[in-house]
Length: 231
Image (tube, rainbow, N blue to C red):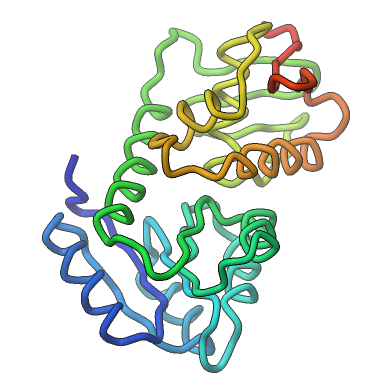
């Protein structure tokens, strides 16, 4: 797939790297916006309203994690962190705060393109309703497949794109056990590049946001299963 008409905001202070990424993305027909300072990032974000955010963590003016936190308070768009911070703690912190993916510098720009394409492909797949039902019911939750929202009573639960995709995948396959690798492959794609801790973190976030009635069961040593009764 191409990235035609996709708006991507790249917040990165390494000018040469930013221009190179922009060049590659524009070859894929994406519209790319650049920002090289953390303290001006939110103003540019509000102005361009991107479909995806590429975010460096170490920025002048404001830290990337602060930007991530601000964006997640109001938006659920996909976010990929691009960072020279390569420790597991840094990756896990970024994912826990709501990032959908994490690439450590130096990285292959071709791999970055694949990850971006995969995110948009998955979003399109989940937007295609394979059932005549537009809504699924479970306990006090309503899963609106067309709007891609999970509601408790009439209140929307603020899930990120990947959290929603993961929950919907499990809902569509009740009573089936999936390993972390299988979930990564089906929700994130390109499993060979993946950090399986990403799945664990997103399951934890789902449980935190949905509460004890989330229906997700951990199968020790194997993976996860949705045990709820969909109606």
